[in-house]
Image (cartoon, rainbow, N blue to C red; front, top):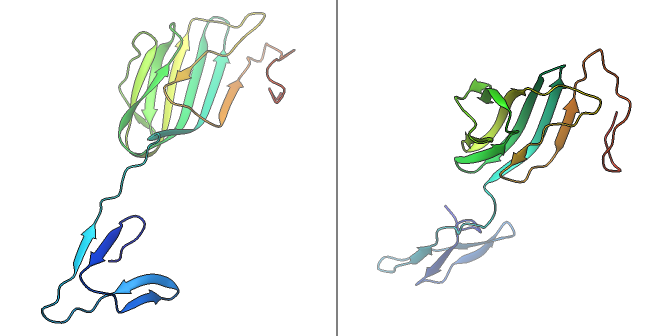
Length: 176
């Protein structure tokens, strides 16, 4: 093995016989019998930062006359196993939670759902329904995550008996 920026080391006791190989600093040592070389290795230091990243979020709501069905899909990467807390609407009746397509027994307590995310990249899907129908105006259910997220998409699937007349939002959206 050789020393690197990831595994720093320092040698003492002998001077190297070669320092550069193929344009890269690579000390080489050739001790004679009776000579010794001491090599000090250091364990890499941890770097500050978040260990859970939510790469994309899709919130898809389908409002009906008296009931609204919602699907939340998250793509998350984690460097270690840890919980992700989702704050759902208080009236939400949890239907299903899956991690990489496999059911995870879960329940929301006081509007908070905890999903344990193992190390690696995973797809989390949460489905719920709530007793809320579509009226004259409609807004998507509010959801919050315990960690920042990027690439957020919100989607509404209207019933065939409804027409979309107007939308509002920031200058860069919504797109209809």
